[in-house]
Amino acid sequence: MANQSRRDFLKQAALVGTAVTGLSTKSKAAPKNSLSEDRMGVLVDTTVCIGCRKCEWACKTAHNLETPPLESYEDRSVFENRRRPDSKALTVVNEYQKNESEKIPINVKVQCMHCDHPACVSACIVGAFSKQENGSVIWDGDRCIGCRYCMVACPFQVPAFEFEKALKPDIKKCDFCFARTKDGQIPACTEICPVEAITYGRREDLVKAAHEKIKNYPHRYINRVFGESEVGGTSWLYLSSKEFEELEFPKLGKDPAPGVSEAIQHGIFAYFVPPVALYALLGGVMWINKNKKNDQETEI
Ligand code: SF4
Ligand code: SF4
Ligand code: SF4
Image 1 (tube, rainbow, N blue to C red):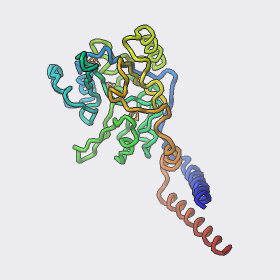
Image 2: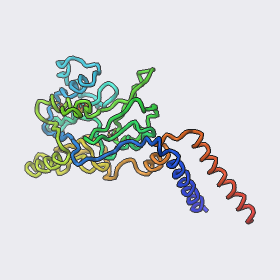
Image 3: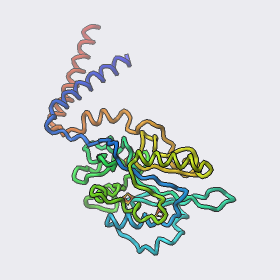
Image 4: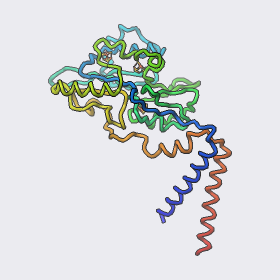
């Protein structure tokens, strides 16, 4: 009986999906999600980063966010608390101790990972997020309706909502400096890093370079490149001397995060369907259900 109901539901959902698609071929608004072989990425070498936080400063400056003077970033007391990117800081650097006896810190820069199969893109019902050909995952404020599904969907808990703004709050996250990179410039954080701990380049080349480093310096790195395959791969990749989970990276599988919700949302919500058409379709489903019930009652 339960199976029968599920089959019926899927049949009806397929009918609705087909009808919705047919009705909306002219107003299709599905998000762009192209994966180019030449998409760019960043390789973060956490064994090289010195925690100077100049990348934080450069990021804020490039995005016209309120930016304290560069000298103030020398204050290392910020490392006493664990920080996350938020609406006022699109990237932050955290510090971890290598081990109890050795007081050498490991610094980890955190920002959007620019996933190859971004959950934020899949979750957004109006196509406000898109994966660009150069690898950037960007957000379009003109499309966003503020539902915040992206925040719930992101496996790295990155998108931040401007709760402090009463009028027209934005979703904030690292945009991979799309305004710069689309014109051939490199991201502001990679440009300022004084020790080349963050390298911008073709993702494919960075993956090779990362494995080369691991092969040449097996005592320096663990044998893993975070982001190479996690959630289907990300544009930002990390090297480390310590297990990533110990540096508070989320434990994720290789499958893209969007999962089953993607098909449903893209099939129904990513098209601008006039509400009256949607109600008509839902009415149709109810009519099918009612008739089915009547038929069953007649059989009895
Ligand atoms: S890290 Fe989150 S916000 Fe960034 S692309 Fe991936 S799912 Fe989207
Ligand atoms: S790529 Fe641009 S937006 Fe992203 S962390 Fe670096 S400076 Fe900030
Ligand atoms: S600028 Fe470079 S060295 Fe300094 S904190 Fe950022 S990634 Fe690390």
